[in-house]
Length: 201
Image (cartoon, rainbow, N blue to C red; front, top):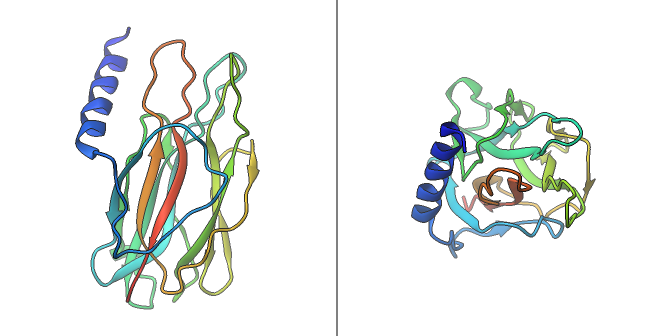
């Protein structure tokens, strides 16, 4: 096994061990969708700094690798949290739950000034078994408080499911469901599911 892969595996298991089960915090209402992928445990939650809420997001995406190669599509998601009603892109704080090792971060997408993220829909590939290459989650789209829809620059495979419920006061936290790195010659799917915590004030 290449040294780089061994190091990545070691870091993954260390972080996953520290993460625990990522149980939900009861005081923060969560929203999710019903079509998330089945693999991997829920990781830890990350919350926007107090007094801020998510006005934008960015994705960690592995490009299509071609036939006979392993694809993972979405590997992570960041919320960009700002204070007040002016967007505050330059001062936004970034939060993310567990991300996987493949792909690169995209440029942020933002709600219009004064807007914030309220709900989402997840694109997920249908589960494949055996020797098939299963990607898990492949893209996401968000609804903004003014009705605008932002679609991420993910991959086109899979189908979008139903929209989540809405967080009337916006999204203030994130939690991801990640399949751990499985090793050489075994299918990896990375991000399988995601949920968000609603702002309470």
